[in-house]
Image (cartoon, rainbow, N blue to C red; front, side, top):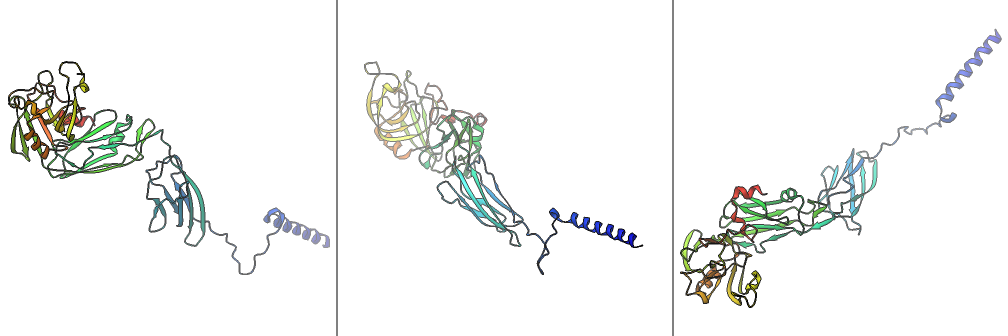
Length: 388
């Protein structure tokens, strides 16, 4: 009996020791928790993310998010240590940049966040923006904000644009009152906007070009946004007729004056079609050498001409021509310009300005090309719109 009990007791003790060894790490029993202490591990802080972080378009916002908690502070700085402004959502869950970044920079982001129970998270991250092959700063024409009803809007880029669709998508024109219009590429660097018909007098036209950050293709990106507002004054339209040798002038559709004119001779005919005044100067030195007739050649001239309004880049102006008063109203004798008497030229100069219209008919010349300054009106609108 004694031996049997001893053996049974020994086996029971061995089993208890084995069980104790399996429940302890490394074979050492866990220390007893102090009286009143909780055995629950601390909860982790919020999950904090920064997005995006690499090859970031500087015009796109950067977001900082705290999942499972709220943001206590977010500090984003550029390489010089200047702080980037941002806004935090009312519930503290997100922070978003509120200003554009710069190209080719690395920004530091330091974030602190907590859970509702107060568990913290601290994060330091970096945001790197893309570095374009080239930045393109586009320009807007006309350079004045008070324009006539015929004035197109031109956006000219510094380099040929590869992704023309992306460039046009970044450009928005609105008008008050609303008027249909469209863009058309005049060249690989210039895109123009014009309405279907002349602007309504009194219109306000606004161009908003979100070009900063726009991918123009070929590694080129827009260097800056564009924003211009134009005000359209009265509809001043001149109708110059080479058959009658007269020019009628209309103010908002009402005939207000008729002038005798002389257009281009048979050798130098004035272009037909709609011309738009692009510049006006009290005097201009006109030199035939600019279109190939040099000193000593028949027809050469170089003289100062008064009261000049340019209507094409092909050397066509409306100007004072006291030397041809005898032919004005009867013969076309100019080198392509619209010749007026000094008195008529002064009246025209006083009333017509940038964006006003001169329509030329029956001159015997070819149509003004769309690429010749503001020759945009030479193309029917449906065809114009298809070139956007």
